[in-house]
Image (cartoon, rainbow, N blue to C red):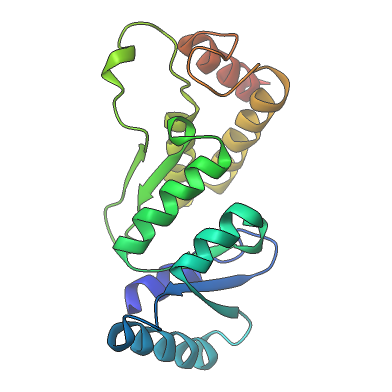
Length: 190
């Protein structure tokens, strides 16, 4: 829990509300999540009183992520619920094929990836949206402390998404995989 809380504190400020949300299931998994919730609030109040803290059951988190995803800045949770929530978040933002993910260790080696998998049926066809891989690089840059480069890359992706692509779906972007990559690279070079 301490590790998740520390990373959650480091990640705050990514959204508009300056909040950390703890996701658990205190009404069913009482022993573990009662402890997590008490520690979350006690340690948070003692060490980070400027950060607003909220608690949500995992089922409510999923419901509110679909209805009002803007409510969440940073969600702190364990691996099992985190895996479920990140897949849901990927679908809310447009699909597994365009979502980036990171296994982030604020004190050591981290790993970043497009979370949609390898999609072998599309090999060599040039139809896959490369933005998930590009956004994984953006997350890596941000985690490495390269905020300016990360922000520039994120802005380029936002521009291409808003102004160039017909769709985010594989094969429906209006461009090939390499052409989408080129559009992002061109925007970066401006």
